[in-house]
Image 1 (spheres, rainbow, N blue to C red):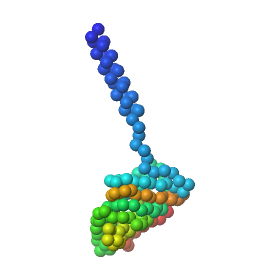
Image 2: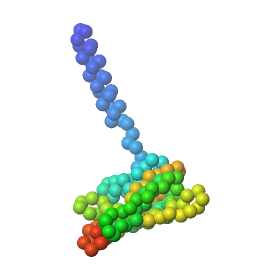
Image 3: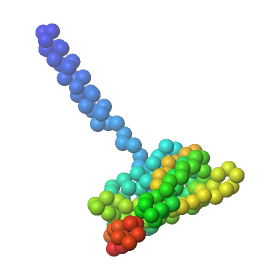
Image 4: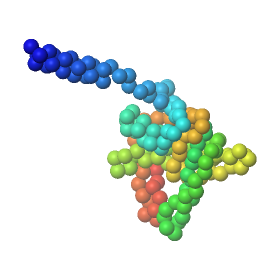
Length: 166
C-alpha cells in the first residue's frame, strides 16, 4: 500500500509540474504590427541590433527601412578605408535624437545598416555608423517600414563595405 501511495504522489507531482510549466505565460512581444510594418518599444538593457535581427527572422521581413529615437548607450564606427574596418567609439547615457537604417539579408542572416545621432547632457551631438546600441534609461521606439522585395547586402570589392542591393 505504501508503495502505491508513493507512486501516486510521484505521478501527481509530475503532472502538476508539467501543467504549471505549460501554464506559464509567454513574455509579451516588444512590438506590434502596423499597416506599413512594425513598431518596436524596447526597454532598458535591450540590445537594439539583436532585437531588430530577431524581428526580421521571426516576421520573415524581406527588407525594410527604419527610424527611431530614445535613450541609449551607443558605439559608433567610422569607416577606415585603409583597414576596411570601423574605428569604434562608445558613449554612455545619451539621447538618440535620430536613428535611420535598413534591414537586408546577407549569407542567410539579417544584415542591418544603421546610422544615428545622439546628444549628451551638454547637448553636444555625436553620430555615425552604429556598431552597437543598448537601451539605457527610458525606452527606444523604432518604426520599421517593410518593403515587399527582398533586400540583400554584398561586399563591394573596391571599398570592402557591404552594399545594399536586390
